[in-house]
Length: 263
Ligand SMILES: [Zn+2]
Image (cartoon, helix red, strand yellow):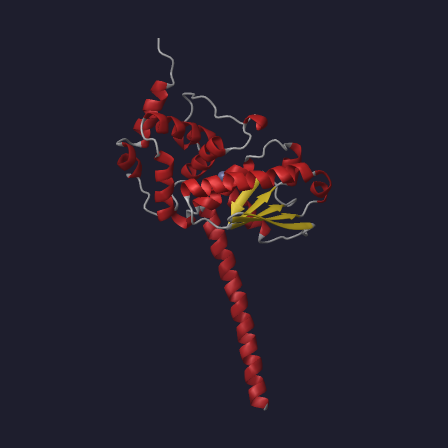
């Protein structure tokens, strides 16, 4: 009996130790992934893994057709004043996510979680099917609803650990915001005109506008193709030449020339 008891205690201890070890490994793996992944995701996970100070105030599950959105609010002010923006975020999710999934990745997650998180100080960040939104930003700029469109594209992208350069990931997400956005004019969000000081590696809107130009003038389905290769981990430095016959530098030079007034 005594021996068995001891054996039992020993294996429980060993089990607990293994659990702790596993947790530490998962935590570090997570940090590593995020250090190499989207910059906005990295900031959040690193901090949140260490401090959790906030609690869920409301938890809604909304399903429309194929997709389910879990909407968690942890912010007291948002609970009082956020009803309108919350409804717009939900509507934007179902409209943008379905369109993005249809165009880019039908195997994307069916279930997405939004967290209104007073601990998050950026605008929004996405990792592993969860988007964190800063309640102060959403309440101050309730028209900036297509933050949703940009962030949920990161879920559709699902590039994982070796997804190519970060400027490409963010350029694609803002291209998608420009194309699938529900109310960019309402947010006074637009793609900035070409300037000689820009580069395609500037990321976000600068890259997005460049992609739109390339699709109109060189290769119509550029972004769908880039996105598919990034997700399949077959993207490399030659991909752009395979798709368009030119390098990014050459395409950018053409874009610059086409957008520079002559004379
Ligand atoms: Zn992003």
